[in-house]
Amino acid sequence: MAGGPRFRHLDDLKWQEVRRQQHGDKTVSVFEKWPEFSERYLTVYAKYEPGMMVHKHGHNSDHVVFVIEGDLMCGDVHCPAGTHIALDQGDSFGPFIAGPEGAVLFEIMMGDPRSFAADPEGWERLLAEKGVEQLPNPPIDMPDWLEDTRTLPA
Image (cartoon, rainbow, N blue to C red; front, side):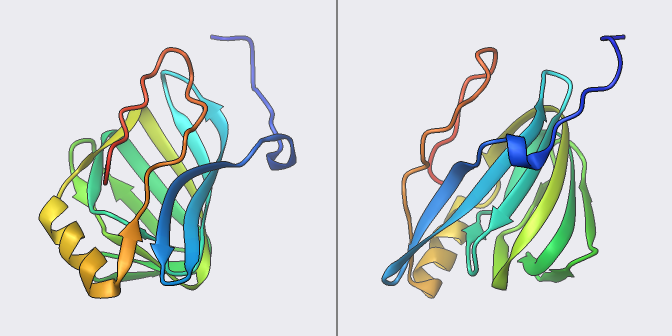
């Protein structure tokens, strides 16, 4: 064991802008706080701004998402507050589209949290259909032991 529990409060953690898009004349983003980021697991408190979209993707780890506030679409499934989503390592889900009030999520990834794109062609069609421009991923503070492998759109 590593010496007992670790306690962190969201107010003590910095926001990281992890994804950004141009929707007409405004920019929308996903912001995350990481209460725990270790080789064993990552916990994420995420805010999706209204209309924010994230491509269909999977992770190199098991992944659990819980919708705390607002709502989003995960593929063709509406996920209002209270929805629990479980994704096994190597499977994929999405695309995600945040509702008109945005969404607040709590996520847990058990292992390597990095993602992979699952449907790049479908993503390009969705961006064109919605008139959205995917902007470059903002820089983030990754732990020294994990390389940031994000690319567009992954």
